[in-house]
Image (cartoon, rainbow, N blue to C red; front, side, top):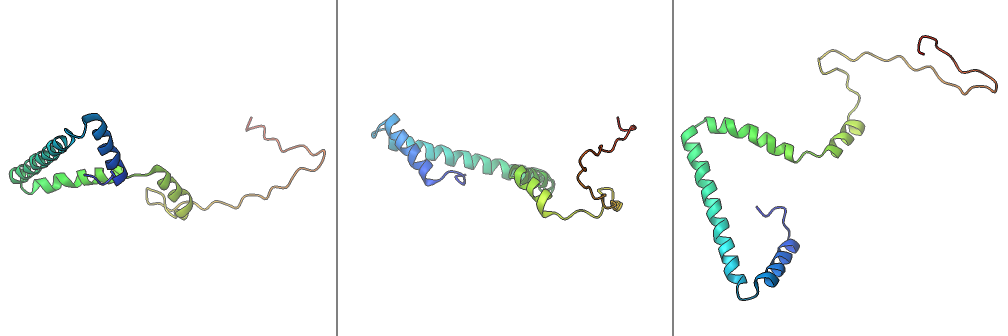
Length: 125
C-alpha cells in the first residue's frame, strides 16, 4: 500500500497533522486511521475469499486479464518508442507473416552544379 510513499512524505503528513490537529488529538487520529485501514483490508480480503469460493476455478481466469491490465499501468511510452526506434533491428517479416520486400539502394545524390536546373517530374506536380 505504501510502495509509492516514502519516509519524507510520511514525515510531511505527520507534521501537517500536528499543526492541523494539535499534539493532543494527533495520537487518537493516528489510532483511528490505523484501525480504519486495517478494517478496509479485512473487508477486501473477505470479499476476495468469498468471490474465490463462489466462482471456483473461474476466479483465476478472471484474474489473468486484470493482471495484464495492471502491467499496462506500468507502460512507459517514451521507453517503448525508444526501444522500437533504436534497439530493435529492422524486422524481416511483416505483421502478417510475409517477408518484407528488400528496398533497392537509393541513387547517390550529388549537389547541383552552378546554373544546373533541378530535376523536374511533370507527373508529380
